[in-house]
Every structure is written in structure tokens, then in C-alpha cells.
Image (cartoon, rainbow, N blue to C red):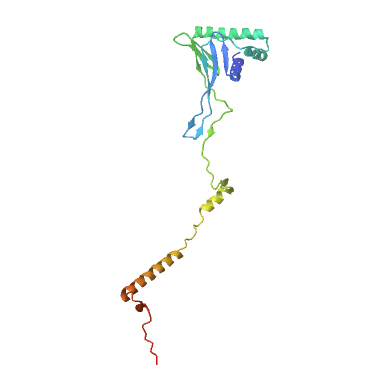
Length: 204
């Protein structure tokens, strides 16, 4: 009976027990272990809600199929199970339900559970080591063109175009010419004859 109800609890995430409460299957979050660089698998535990809720017909139908009894007998089995569990807790102080937990009473007389922790074999820790791929090639959009990451890297490392300094040289020559002209004019003056031919042409 314990085993059959445990299976139902795993499948349906909750189980109502008359006079005891509602068992819930709950899940903890995964945690990261920095030392081993792994994410631990989620863990599962049970909680007991002190609520007066009648078991669902789904439980009776499922139990009648598993135990191969009539639905009426399944109802009686659930009531007897809850009654016996409650009496055992009252008599011995605690009842251990394998894979579910330990049932006992708190200071207020309510039945509570010290849950077992479940680790499913189907959920294993996951390694969280960062993978770095060198020269991983993938395509990227550059404007309307599609290029690979390798092409973009080669493009970014191309030598910059050489600058044309010819116009600077031309400006320097012009400035020097003006300077020479200024020096010449300052020495000879602005007389037009100073810039003309000084040789006298004699006629016979």
C-alpha cells in the first residue's frame, strides 16, 4: 500500500489522506558549485498541508487498477491507511514512510512531516565549463552584404591607404617662391626698371 500510494504521489504531485492532510511533491532549484564548476540536479521533497480535502476519484480509480480491486474497496483501503497512519503516530510518536519521510506531531498536535530528499537518476549534474572556440567562423551582415567573421577580421587588419603628401610639397614651393619674391622686391624696390633688363643696347 505504501509503495502504490508513493507511485501515485510521484505521478500526480499530490495525495490527499483523510484526517491527515495533503501531501505535495515539491522541487528545489538547481544550484551552482564553483569548486566543481557544475550545476547540481534539482532535488525533490514532500510537504504536508493540514487541510481537510477528500481524495479525488482519480486516486480511487488508479488504486483499483493497480491493486486489482473494486473502486469501493479502493476507497476503504485509503480510509484504513489514513486511520492506521494517524493511530501509529499517536501511539509511537512517529511513523517512517520509506522514500517519503517521517511523520510526527508538532507542539500543537498537528501531524507534520520531516521529508526525505529525492534525487532522480534521470537528472544528473551538468558541467558548466565555458567553451571557447578559436577562429569560429560564422556569417554576419555588413550593410547588404554577407561576410564571414574571418573575412571581417582580415578586413579590419588591412593596411590603411597611404596618404598623398604631394599637395603639401606644392604649397611649400609656392610659399618659398613668395618669400623669395618678397626678399627681391625689398632689396630692389618697386621700380619697374629694377625688374627689367639692365643692359644698355647701343646702336651704331
